[in-house]
Length: 446
Image 1: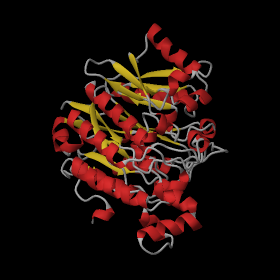
Image 2 (image 1 turned 60 degrees about the vertical axis):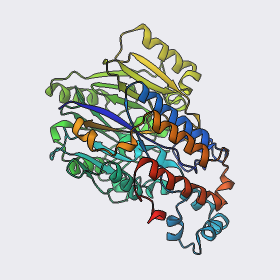
Image 3 (image 1 turned 180 degrees about the vertical axis):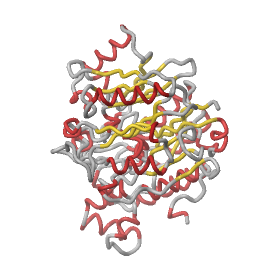
Image 4 (image 1 turned 90 degrees about the horizontal axis):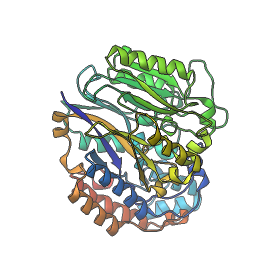
C-alpha cells in the first residue's frame, strides 16, 4: 500500500526559557540564564511547519505540555493553592521550579519511537513514548505525551500506543532522536536502526565527560514491544568520544531517510561495520544503501555541534528529490557553509538545501530534527489521524493569532516565579485543545 512520511512538529510552549537544565547539551548550558522570547520561538517553529507543508510535505502539529507542572512540585512536598506552590518552590528550590517549567516537550524527536505498520508484527503503527529518565525535567513528560498521542492517533485498530519503559537508567530511552528507519519506499518493509550510548549489562566503551542517555537494553525493549523482525533491525553504539564532545543524541551527528544515511565520520563505534550491516539488511529487501559521510577535515565534530549540521531533516519531495533542512547557524559557520556549498558541485544523494531561522530553539540545543517526530502512514492510517492537526493555511492563521494572544515576548529565569505564568499557559492550552480538537488532554481540564 502506498505510504508517505509525515513529520509532527512540537509547538513551542508558553514557558520557553533558558534554564540550562541539560548537562551534556553544549548549547543549553552555554545560554543558561539568558532571556528567552517564547513568542518568537513559537513563531519560528510554526513558520517551519507551514513552509514544509507548502512544499508538499505532510506536516502535523503536536501540542505543548502543561507547564509549569504543579503536579511535579506537589509530588516533592510543596503545598497550598497553585500560586502558593509556585511561590514556595521559587523561594526554596528554584532548580525544581525550573525543571517543572521547562518547555522541552517542543523537541518531539524525544516524544516517542515510532515503527510503521509495514515493519510491525500486528500491522499497526506502534509508538513507545520515551521515558527520558536521564533528566528530571524530561522524565515527567511521557504520561502527558502518551495522552496527546492517543488524542491524535486514537484508532486502536491502526495505532498501538505503548506505555514508556520503566524510568530507570538501565532502560534509559530517548525516543526517535536515537532511531532511524531505512526503506526503499516508505510503504515497504524497512530496516530499523537503533543507536545507543552504552549498555547497562554488557561491555564496551563509555563516555567519560557526559552521560550516555540511551541504553542498548532500552533499544532492544522497544524493538520487542513493536514486534520488529530481528533480521530487519540494526543496533549500533554511538561513539563515546562524540558524546563527550556534546553529541548527546544520535540525531546531532547523523540523520537518515529512505536508503541514505548522512553522518559524520566519527558517529559510531566500528563505523564501517555499521555501514556493512545496514547495507546487507537493505540489500536483502532489494534496496541499495548509501552512506554520505562527512570527514573531520571537512567539518569537525565541534563544528557539527555548534551548527547542528546533522540535526537536520532529510526529506523526499514528491518528485523524488532529497532535501536537507538545516538551521541558519549552518550558514554562519564557514566550514559547514563551505561543505553545504560543495554539495551542488558533486553527485550526492542530497539535491537541495533549505535553511530556517530557529534561533530560539537552537540556543536551547534543539534544531530542525529535534522539533519533529517522523511517522510513516499509509492512506488509511492518515485518514484515521485527528484531521485538525494537519498544517494548512487555516490552521497556520489560527495558531499564529493564538500565539500573538497568549505568549510573552520576553521570559527570564526569574519570571518563572510569577504565578500568572501558569494562568496564562493554561488559558493558552485550553484554547489550543479546541483548535486542534484534542479534547480534555490536560490535567487542569479534568
